[in-house]
Length: 342
Ligand code: IPM
Ligand code: MG
Image (cartoon, rainbow, N blue to C red; front, top):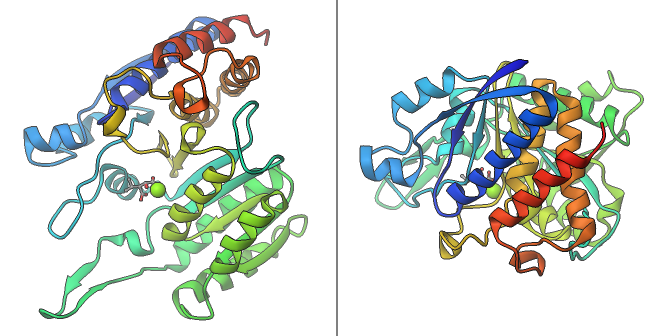
């Protein structure tokens, strides 16, 4: 039996519910694939902030470091001057999880504006406007520094091209180097030079504004889209909207030796505690985790179990037009996992 240590942040709002639904899936995978996940629960988020005065105490970081990978529920970030950076932003930086992979595609029975969309957003995850370098110059002027490094650009472009090579071999860089000549200009130069090592991948460039328009008109034309941090944040929500919303949108934050997996959606405090939140984004994030640790069969099985559930269209949460509870959905996915032959 193979053992893994998985650290888990339950998060705020609907976090504990969607994560406990995902724990049910972890159990189903353990049983089917003879794996063992030692779970290390870690305090972080708004609740931790209220208790300890920080959303990510040092002892939480120490616990995460003892694990092979991190599953993270949504956490609430405070807004405005003087507040801490959000938990995911801190963790991405601390563990240098520079590649944020966000696969967004149509799923059966999920109402969406388009069909035939299958896009992987590769978002740079450690620099750009997320560097936390904001200053007050005077009573009148606040500035924020937008960081672009050559190493940062090279490593994200490499990940993006490698992913494109495994998919439909098409990649698009979104940038604004007509205005941001040094920062986006650097990303554009590096994109062009890395593309020379991937002659089999068709590389295109779009200005980010035009890309936003084309995505809402003809999203089927895109495969991998590589973006700096803030563009990636915005465009990934936009593409999620094209395929039916954030309830089904997972993500992987990957570095050289560690990775964090989290749903893209937020903590939705308005529906917290009602057992109606859709757990699929968290469950698909765990599927991405399985893939990253090398359990490819288990990863595919979890995704196929979700697809089977959606195809049947019987057990769906309210956001997908059903009336099943969070728990009922995960129970049904667990059953699907048990019944799939590998
Ligand atoms: C995301 C989220 C985070 C981000 C927030 C919660 C800080 O929107 O993962 O896309 O901006 O990166
Ligand atoms: Mg976001």
